Amino acid sequence: MFDRLLFWLREKARLLFGENTTVSASVSDSMENAIVLWAQMYDSGGPWCHGGKNPLHSLGLPKSIASELARLTTLEMECLVSGSARADSINTMLQPFIADLRTPVEYGCALGGILFRPFLDAQGCIQIDAVQGDCFCPTRFDSSGRMTGAIFYDHLVRGNRIYTRLEDHEFSGSTYSITVKAFRSMTSADLGIEVPLTDVPEWAAISPHTEFSGVDRPLWGYFRVSGGNSSDRHSPLGVSVYAEAVETIRDVDEQYGRLLWEYDGGQLAIDVDQTALRTDADGNVHLPERLERLYRSWLNGSIGANGRNLYEAFAPALRDESYRRGLDTMLKRVEFQCGLAYGTLSDPQNVDKTATEIMASKQRSYSTVKSIQHALQGALDDLLYAMNAYADLYQLAPAGSYTAVYNWDDSIVNDPSERKQLFWQYVQAGKFPMQRYLTEFEGYSQEEAAQIAAETSAENNADEALTFAP
Image 1: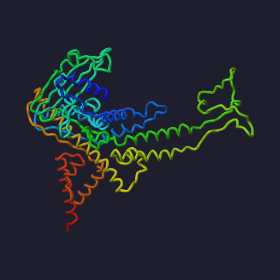
Image 2 (image 1 turned 120 degrees about the vertical axis):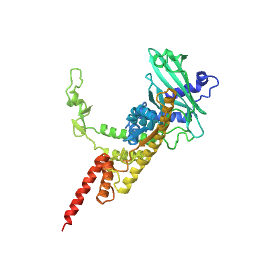
Image 3 (image 1 turned 180 degrees about the horizontal axis):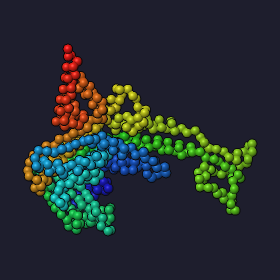
Image 4 (image 1 turned 45 degrees about the vertical axis):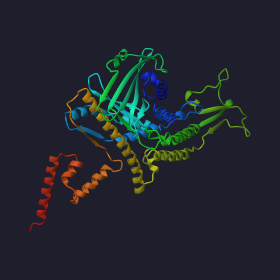
């Protein structure tokens, strides 16, 4: 659908949004092809898994990679907004989105980016739409590479008619404008004719044109996966987390196919001479269903010293271990290209075990995840700014300031159990306060921790007095 949307915009931009429009698809052909490829790899493995005489069986690596990085990125992640009644209102509307953030982040990792866009629902509350990388078209960027214009689309099917809604969002100067148009078509190959928004009940309450003034950025948060873009070095769009491993992933699927063929082709079978089997009146051989797989073929040949035996077993030695070692080597290469620790996709039993190698491998994942977290936090900051602007425009809460506090888990490198044990040793050595240990590592409140620490200190003092008593 993404390539079709771009075709529509390139061919009909002036027709859609007026003769003086500056709308155009700011996506090169190479970047368009890359996004389509990344989406296909995530959905079904890649073009090499479909069509042709020998389609490959996908190992599903693209989805596994995006899913694992999204999991590590959002593991125990928290974002709390506070500071005023306005902040409390924004926080209430934000938390359901944060609770399910892992899935949008996974889509963003797969396609190179995802856009978080607030909108007002029928009940007058702000909802957040996560627009995937192949479901919107960037139209403008500023000199810093920030996206300042985009077109979003939505589809509805009513009987044999297809309704399409296009929203042109543009930030210029200190004004953010939204222009909405609806179209009706009999086929998905074209937009069709323009119709009023009121023709679709779900869109009837949407204003054809809205403007926000006094803003200093677009009213969305664009989560962009950073990294070198070998598809288009000049594109400001993000790249998929598995972009550099595309060819290696195809090699892995091919190797996995060889392994499956080894298991399939090496199955035990019995070659039987046709003369040794009973036939029906028509000369056809019939076997019970369970035996059809075992008895592979019927042979017509002479029996004796110079011929075939009545029964010959086909049981070749499997070479699966060699194929598995080759597959594991390729998986390690994918892990390196995608910034994952060894053992994430490959066999963890075959990973080098020295402390230095383990730390270096974990550090690679840590660095990748921290980079994604940094980009995600920037997108969430922009989303909060947009939600605050919507609250101003629609007077959803009293004016007030807000502060966002983020908490990112770092247990990729720092094992929580090891860290807890280390600080307990500090407590025993008198180098770390007992009260602080109880609150940070055992989950006690400040009051409970203070009471336990005081009791422990009193008991220790009593023991010392008994020890040194005359």
